[in-house]
Amino acid sequence: MTWAERWALLVEWAPQLLEGALLTLELVGIAVIVGLFFAIPLGLARASRHWYIRAFPYTYIFFFRGTPLLLQLFLVYYGLSQFEAVRDSMFWPFLREPYWCALIIMTLHTAAYIAEILRGAVQAVPPGEVEAARALGMSRRQALQFIIMPRAIRIGLPAYGNEVILMLKASAVVYTITLMDIMGVVRTINSRTYQFEMFFLVAGLIYLVVTILFTQLFKLVERWLKVEASRKR
Amino acid sequence: MTPPALEVRNLHKRYGDLEVLKGVDLVARDGDVISILGSSGSGKSTLLRCINLLENPHAGQILVAGEEMKLKPSRDGALVATDSKQINRLRARVGFVFQSFNLWPHMSILDNIIEAPRRVLGHSKADAIAAAELFLEKVGIADKRHAFPAQLSGGQQQRAAIARTLAMQPQVILFDEPTSALDPEMVQEVLNVIRALAEEGRTMLLVTHEMGFARHVSNQVVFLHQGQVEEIGTPEEVFDRPGSERCKQFMSSHR
Image (cartoon, rainbow over all chains, first blue to last red; front, side):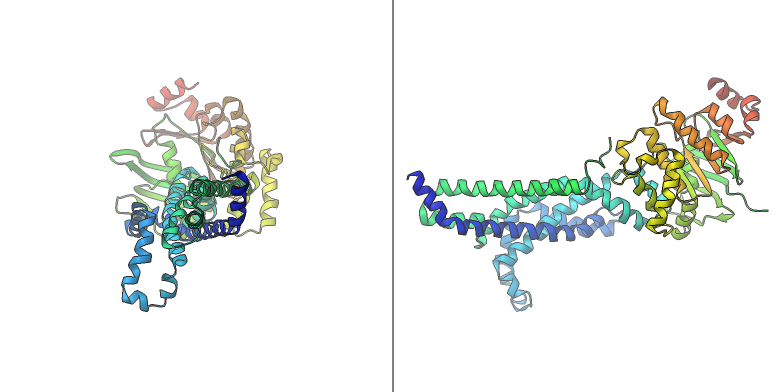
């Protein structure tokens, strides 16, 4: 196959590839943002002094970190439909859609990791800075809201950025439940064109470009939050 | 008679089996500057940290302007606040300056100073900033208001931390070895600020190793030894005519 032919193939399939990339971006983007909101109470509860508050997030995180994303995906997509109660419930219109299954599981999965990042960040806030807040008369709540959380966000931000990129790559498993993400589209193209090596390479390039995108985005956020300036010497 | 600004009665504190404070009494009247001296391990810092409940004492009473902190024993035997609202209110009136500054590194110096007046005292941002500018002026770092703590020298950071404490208009300020984490050339600038505060007539408790400074700035000196007040009196009494053998030894080795 000549370069010209390859190029023609690429142009021919470009719209599908773009759609695949957009679906991947959409799934990952929503999962890591909604996951962050779930992770905030989880991570804070995980850092609690009381065991009965720690118990739920501990179990949750244990399950979602301890099993593969692919397995979780299959459990929801193939498993839940076995239960009549689920099929009869108001959630069924969502749970029977692979898109929603993937989105829900990716969100819950990444929330577990983000919660751990958050717990680590909260516990990494120097105790002296919290003491300073309390010594000035701030309540426990105020110290958490005005000092600990803003500080923990800056401490945890690089690890969160890392988690987003890990989720981007982990999202490649959603093609197994028929979603046309980057991997799904490329496999479809391959079965039509038999140009495996070319389109797998193209898939790799798309993932790299999206990674660069995310990296730059996080650089901007770090600059906006003045993470560098707030680093201790 | 107005009650003393700060009073500590029979304060006990232990870490496990180690008794760090064995019944300390202390009274600070308005305008008193009390230096607390003693060798390391004598319980000076612990005493200061117990006063605003950064550490939980095991027995004793703490009174701020005559109001007693409501304390109750916890499961491990230490006294904890019964009424957290009261403790927060009293803490807001007792300033604390840390050895390691403990500025919040993610905020500018100005934001460090206005945070507590806004959140705790409910001051408006404009009022808090106006007040903060004055305190920054007073400690001599007005030009650093928009800098971040990491961009400041240790001495400047400690002065910013003092301004942060002053912004709460405390009745008493506790200084916990405010110059011990500083390079030698920065000690003086911080001591000058503390001296100026003393001359204003502020009530202060000062744990320090700067003997010459303690002598000049304070009207009362307390010598702690093994968790007890071994000697208390005017600087002349404690420095020049110490009664106890321990205090004599300490003074002669710290000239």
